[in-house]
Image (cartoon, rainbow over all chains, first blue to last red; front, side):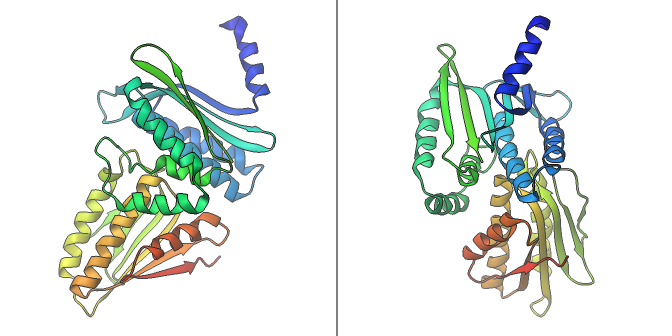
Length: 180
Length: 130
């Protein structure tokens, strides 16, 4: 890895990466990374941009913690850790947040359908859909309110992009990118 | 009446009740790992408070949140629904003030969206004085 490290760093620079995290993510760790991100952004951007990037970062990070197929529950505290990768950067003048984690193959059809539906909605449709979903009881397998992806679609300048890469019979790697 | 005083953390707002002014304040940021764990003491306090609240007393709820995540947004709607039920079914006197920083573009927008979803609850959008 030592020989590859500079290459790794160069690749990050080419992609405009400001911050990258790979591994098991916890809420505590997310809060720390989030603070660093806000402090860095505050030096260059107005408070609305800072909050927008931060909001997108939180929704993505909490998705990894809650829904990654790689889960660890810490022994002493009731804290969940989810494995994944989270990248925040800037390309062509726009901030992006990209995140990826493994998911079970049997979850792909539903997720694919849900995200495709959101991709096609206008801002007004997304607003109505968000309000409709917020009124509903929280889905049983959801650890949040099931509103995260809608919120991401609403905050995103362009529709988010996503993909699934086959890992093996059981798992795939889910990637999603939100552009501000 | 039991007092309510939950200090802020980096991921949760301060939640406190001032008995003198009958005001509940929620101030800060809200994006905890587990929203129901955070909100359940607030709801149990609220339920017993509303039970004892006399009709002539005005209960004020001041909410000033810089940032909250999507699960907290659901929790806030549940909170407003609970208050609205107390107004419409038990004739309680409740005022919610959604305090927003005019420089924070989303804060007013989020407040407006809650207001659109509520009918009987007095929900004021109040610009923060700087």
